[in-house]
Length: 75
Image 1: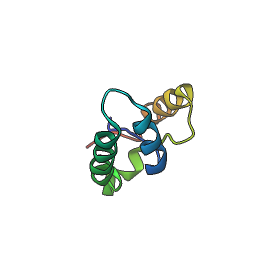
Image 2 (image 1 turned 90 degrees about the horizontal axis):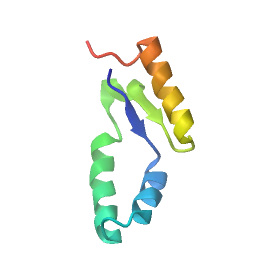
Image 3 (image 1 turned 90 degrees about the vertical axis):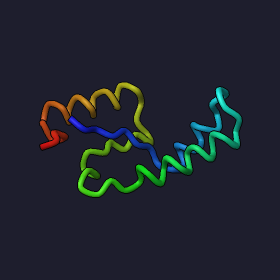
Image 4 (image 1 turned 45 degrees about the vertical axis):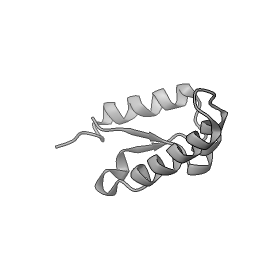
């Protein structure tokens, strides 16, 4: 299975700047870099679960549904 959990760029940035492991500037730079790499996955875009508004349980349920439906298998 290939499943990507991805929030909107705005939400991802908000979450990143709230982290204390790295400084704010570094977190922003990391999000900018990573977002560009994962914002358009081409043929794998259907494997993305938008987690912007999901709770942890909703994320778990969405992943379980993808797995059960076999919708995210790589061939």
